[in-house]
Image (cartoon, rainbow, N blue to C red):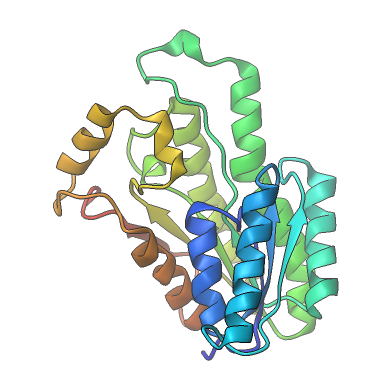
Length: 255
């Protein structure tokens, strides 16, 4: 499927993986809304970079990018974000549920997590997928369908990651993807990308020893390239013959 002229909302779209997805979509001619909760400066910069690139010919001409603040852990804000995005863009074809959060606690430190930690991670990493997708699906169905792509993690496939609470939330995000694929077929395709460790600002919570150990656990002995991971989201958005799939981009970490 040609992506030119499509309209996308990317939660957590101003930094890290979300930013790279946005930059690659812009080159394909996709108009977009970049959502943020706290990263206002970075997200505004990304949106401006996309607009400047389009004006200078580095991206697709006429591409529009808007930055919108919303805390996707709050249902009402998530629903308003989707509605406002569709209003700004004139519709919605692609939803990328990329926003996520964690708490860095060693698995062995069971006392390092409390009920509020589990609630916060579940609301952001799981519930936001459901409520953003529900709101987006109502809009997408009016124009014949669309694509929802969730950012999950290899931590949801194997006991690993920044904490038990994070790993469990990502496992829930994986099953949410499959449940939504069933619920929204055939008009809307729902898939997910499960990255391994990427060198974004996320890794500031890990020690150098942890990062090195994570690299050594992969078949390719390296961390995941952000650009390569982002490109998988575009490949999925172009594909109208897959749904309910969880695509690993993890350098051979999980077989």
